[in-house]
Length: 391
Image (cartoon, rainbow, N blue to C red; front, top):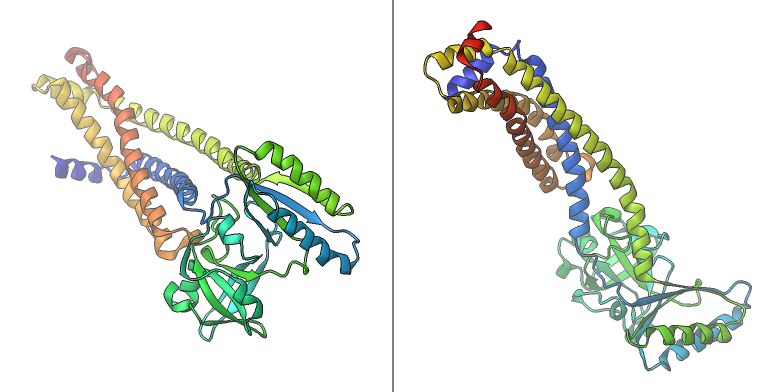
């Protein structure tokens, strides 16, 4: 039966060229929509590599404070943080904290590889504050203060690109122009830009042990949930009294995340709305084409009914023919879609494209069944006498 349907449709391919093109166009639209959606979904479900909850962000700017006072003030701030018993931990770092708009990118190399990576300047408490998982080696410690080399910690993605595996990266050297760095640890990929970002080089990042005097730092504090409200007011007041000439701005890391999510979801929502209209138009176009195609065959349907075919048999045959028609259009569409994972277009993973192809094919077949059922069912119920009049 199926072989006969394919042969029948192929012999009438010129007649059905318009429908072939409609299915081909519909598949490409769905493939693009699902590729975009699956890519966003995969990024959202991928682990961030850190915990952002209950962290309070304090941005410090020392303005025109004399250089000799900066180090002393920072030490006072650090000692003040240690005096709060209700603080779980705190950390100083550079400007490119999670969910911020700041970034620092540089180029690093070994003898055989060269990669771009996000650069993070952090202190010894940073990994504890963000619950960063150390896969290999260790995080920074006091022993690095007297080290003869510049210690760095790599993300897993960067370690694999430079050395082939995370384990092989430990104690290896990395070159930053004329400076030689030594890898002491490897951590999970640190997706500080948020859930909908892939990061430089797919997640390449490198952490340096920060000198607090080099740039105005960011102070991040993890506070106890129960004492959060009263403690924050106390900390804010104490910081301003210790550094009266400094600009001090506070925020929650979770609020920065929500802001980042909203900015990323706006273009996604626009694309989904446009795609929704396209899909509705595709469905209406398919319905109209299928209705017209089936309506022209009322005479044929009358002959089949007069020869004993039941309404169900006629409906199944008409829907089957439409599915075969769709298959011819999909074959052409699949030829183009398969090129995307092969050529690595847009840098998306093959799994995203394969999932989009499967979802698009399934959606086309579902649309065909839904759009073909009503006109097929109506045509099969046409009285024999009325149907034969068209013949």
